[in-house]
Length: 205
Image 1 (cartoon, rainbow, N blue to C red):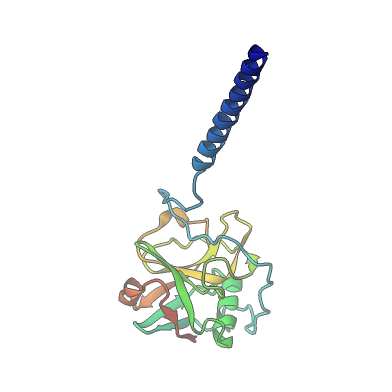
Image 2 (image 1 turned 30 degrees about the vertical axis):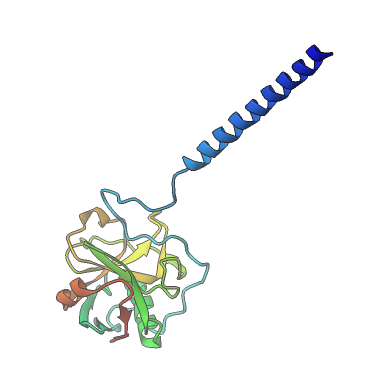
């Protein structure tokens, strides 16, 4: 009888140890799951994390490059950023930007992303996930200091219809991969002063 009891106790202890071992192994596996934080890349890109399926608003500007305003001024608390727009090289992108600027869409939106080489803003949600889709409009304009571009998934098919970025350095790795639709002609010093959550007070044409 004693042998049966001892045998039962040993079996119970064995099962208990197996359960403890498996539990610890599962916890170790969970602890090794990498976080979802974004790590820097050699060629960082002005992407947006997700896009709402909002269609871009119809433009109030004819798509003729001759009739569209050629310049715009991005107003901030740290000064004005004047940009010249490439209405011939990216007419649809420029028309969309002008329509939004004229309607007050950008008023009080923030620059949600600021890095050594770029500032990015214009997201209606303020976190890099807002805006709709529109077709990309690549051209041969190089991304240099002060280039005005459009955030994109990088798939070569669609770009964000709201979020724009301004490069603070040469960014040749973006050439032919992102729509380049303008250049800063005055206020690059203001661009370099922008910090995360600084507001776009408005954009005048």
